[in-house]
Length: 263
Image (cartoon, rainbow, N blue to C red):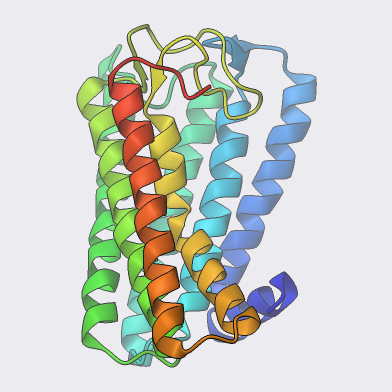
């Protein structure tokens, strides 16, 4: 299975999601271009770094949802409803992030005035709606027989559970009103992701949690294609990998809460 196949599948079955993904990728290019033209910084990094990261990350998530949607025996009406909720809420979310970045102010944890507080609240509501959709997918993956082998259905379920936990970590950041533990947000960080190198950073667990939806099913696909062992053993292998992956996320969360940097 190639990336081209994934794009073509989403384009044929969920054209709305496909074009929203394209919009996100175009906005990522715009963010890169803007970062060279605009030297303003916010918390030590260029103001366009956050729009860039979110454009790419959300594009990956929407593309994944669009592809997985083809495996669920949903009615056309139900698929369209979920597609519209996912794509428009996340596009508005990104739009708010870009708007705040263009003004050189924080989008997250910013309640410095009523307007910025309203934007942050709106972003929280939009993400909460998507967390509900994640919970729906967990329920439906348990309840239904997907158009895929049991191994991949099990991997998809594990992926949804882990991405749900990754979203919960995002909620922890909201409760802290910051992503760093031990110091104020900003300061020295790793390239691009800007994860703190001097304090705990909840974004590490959040990142790996959100991308479990891609990593675990891809691992299961590799096992099914390469391994000659029985279907039962393949499920055991994927389960062990999923548990190990979840434990690693749990450790990075614990590490961050103790104020210890990822690296």
